Image 1 (cartoon, rainbow, N blue to C red):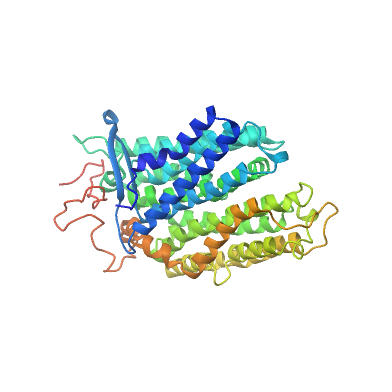
Image 2 (cartoon, rainbow, N blue to C red):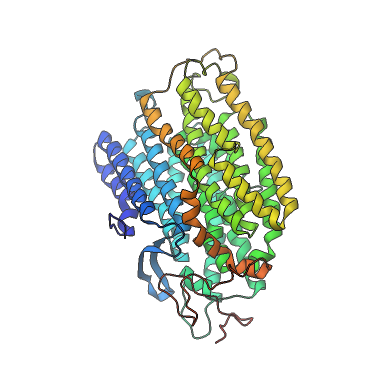
Length: 536
């Protein structure tokens, strides 16, 4: 157990409870409560990382209690290598965004701060819950709950076009959520053997089986929900309006964290539970990934709005992550998990930097109205340069390691997709260098005030950049702790695709040679008849 033995439900509730208390506290106290709560949640994730031994597999810190027993739904939470660093990423970025929101200059403070920080706390709890959930119904509940606070954060504190942006965002994500709900119910019901008990526990669903023809429509429903959340091409229609209207601290979280819940769902839910469909739909997902890389990169290059440069580049980066997952190769999946973390750090830092740049350009986020800051703000320029190099995957950055693993995993069996995706690496260099030069080295716009970043901005941005640098030096911090659990999610799909070596073809985590299972681990899937009934 970790040094600080806090049950996961308590850890999960910390941001929400702080938000609820802040609703009845003075406005200044609500801000401090939010900062302390997010700092406490992040501190606990550091103890988790210290407690995780490299190379381990399986769930830790498990909470597993009946929730709705009549429907086979359990309140089941746990952390493994796959979710560990995404939980840490969530806690770290919420702390940075909360600092950026809580200590803005007086003329830029959010109205109704108590309600604002309540929704921020609810959103953090929902995202952490999605990463910790080990029951499919609970995962769906947290996945849908995320929509509620972001609806208010964009709709009440957004820009001039916030109503239209919120409407489009809700329509897209709600349709995806409804598809996922239907898929989850169908999966639970259809996988229940005759005379068996209904269950939505992820380890149990991984043991049960469905015929491929039944798996495919369920796979497509999950994929639509996850790709909307990411977003990936062509499910990104909500992105331009939402990114323009969302407050920058909230946008940093929307782009850096919420997008990861979607791609995480493929590894946590889809691949281990629907392996036959994952193999059958592999080509479709690879096509979507490659189109996302090329489309996002091309549009990022053509934008003048700094937000949309980063927004469309995120579509490209999410395309790389999907490519790594559906290469169905351990190296690709490892690269995808590393890229989830590093893209989150880089995207959040970029959006916070855009906020700093805008305050020095008369409030404008247009590249044409920026410029001339490199000599007057050397610390800001240095931090921006490091983040830019990471975005374009320069050697020495963790993004370079992630993209390299993804491309190696893709070249293993899908070399054509890997070659086409490599073009995205070149395009990233073009749009990020253009962004950096426009903001730092072009002739200063008429309203540009050349001055160094303040202490509050430094407190939010510098730690993120420091983590990026540290992971570039030692990416094994993540890779060594995620390898076992990430590879386990691919095992059955790789067996079906014929890509498993003898070393990989060992029993799934927690399974003894006699077939008994260790509590909290996913046992071997039983063979099934066409109707889904398990064969003894």
